[in-house]
Image 1: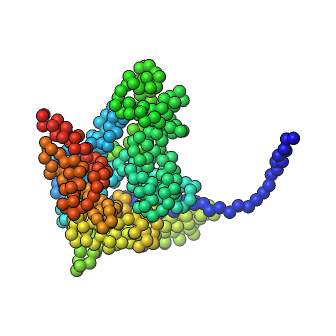
Image 2: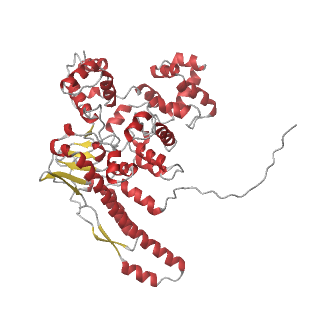
Image 3: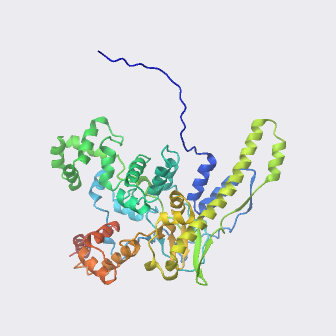
Length: 509
């Protein structure tokens, strides 16, 4: 006996929550991302388009431009973590050079070293004089960053609020290639949430444009792009080859070694067909942030100043370049009275409300920036007094709880905003330092100490990771060898054996 299925149509009510982005909400989010020069340009443009938004004063006028090389100009090429200036051969990419070379015949490390993007860059060196040159040619406004492009997409996604907040946090913590090297467990511990939630947020981020943002590394990226399902736009007949190339570790290793004969055997193709497969590979971006890593060097204009006065930390929001704007209510009332129909009145009211919203949003942005900076430097008072070696462990969650703001709001604000301190100019996100171990140094101090040890090592006998761990112990930083290896790789410093070979090669030995 066959059971029958009865189909029928019914009506029901269902209540759901969803976020609808209004123009004003989107504008407020964008203003949080903007630095002082971006906001200046934004206000001037809006005043030109909106008759009810009037500029009383344009702020400090830019002086005639100078050459960027003069003292007092600070370029974003001088950033932390800095390259090892006297031993540039130490700088290399983290084991993914071979695949990158296969994907596109160019020098990836050179592109990275000459890139002006700000991913991961947190510290601009400068003497502590507070004399600032306001030349606009020396303070260029960058194009939209990868984090900002992802942010625009994330706020429109139909996902739970907590997941959206996490995605924004991840987007603003990507490295210069669009990767997020911390594991889901490490991230969950750092922001005090469930590992499964971080996994969902990372997977959702990977599907934003460009695809693959938030992958752990180059291998995870290619696996995501080509395996189950194939995210990359490749001809159907090549999908199985791509899947095999990046799903089977032994085959991927052959690609890294450029063992093309063995690859042909593994893929069961002849050399002509294999060259066509390589041509398809070269048409794919070698890492998610590839199109965002060719920006020209930027010049930094700090958004705030921080200094000590009478034993207290003083924070001054830099607003000298910001135009003073106000509402032109008289013009609005005249135009409203002369309107001939409802549509025209509605348009005038909308323009006036938008002018009001802009003034309120800029004010809220500055207030929030002050709150975040006050909280950061109340935690990092010893840094303001004594310098980098006295940076304390601090997380976004600490600031979030302190001022009652979402982590996503703090992520937006601290990205691309710089503070001028007695010790130099730093991006605000630099002050979020992780603790390496209980009651021990922060990750910033550990990175600095590792770089100093390697810079001072003997070229003919570089320190191993064990040696570096021993040297750190003498400085009062007790860490294991594997911890040294982890942070050495984050600094893009090769192993002792590779460094020794580099020294020999550079000296012609």
